[in-house]
Image (cartoon, rainbow, N blue to C red; front, side, top):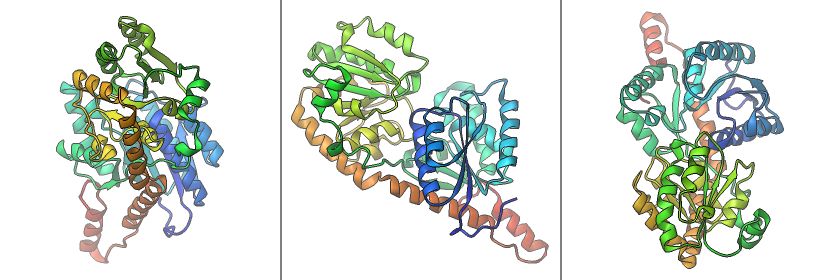
Length: 406
């Protein structure tokens, strides 16, 4: 039962996330840190005991960490994951549950079924990761599950539009990803030369950096296909793939076939990508789908230009200063990278514009404020008293149904 706590009083908030590393985990950790600082009682449910970055940062912020064992994709273990999450919710007794990404959105909404105020944030729609009958089935699930979502929180207008395009009729909130501008202030970070020296990289030659999980979504295979064309023009260029994931072996095999195999550096997973952003001349992320990727915003805040594919959130990140490349267009990707890597002055100018845009549009403080307003609207809508009589009760029930537009 939802406790009738005025919006100005502390809340008990439960965040649920299967990813414990990467952009989703960082978004959750940033929210948790701000909510604890604001006096809320915050619980984070995620795979433990490893917990990853999310677990470490949540505990450091003062949140309570509880184990929730869950695999990334749906599978035979789903009923156990739902049951486990139901127990977590019963023990935590939150005022509001915030579900992050597709697995938490699936298991969480089946476990809660609208009994507690529920916010679902997809961080990129699951139906964009698949095709054919599986995509159609996933779209049907998302349409059905909106009844158990008090708000669907999207990080970009394009992400929301893609949900609406497949018939999702939920109540929407737009909360763009935000960056801790002080943490990614280039004036407080090592220079390009110092960053390269610390990472053991050559001081000479242009460097492109790609930060992201090594998986099909992030498109590193497309990047390596384009990289051969870049090397034809810039044989001394280097590419750093920062991150780890299921596609690492296949990517290493592909890199070995390039004209200059040693031009590609596999940096592995890192806790702090800032030295890599500062060491690079340009950041690139040729994703096949996104909501609004966090890594490009981090690089932009560090004063680096970015090359992105035209997925959800890309145009909102870049503004009018640059245009994203078509998804899967390796030739245009190679041309864009070659142009930037061969022009230091252009990189510097676009980097300054990138920093300005993140400062104006993606301040983490604004993100936290918008999320707080979203929570408040959800809780207030559940506290609206029903008029007396059966007609009033019916009206109140209709008003509480999830899936109606605001």
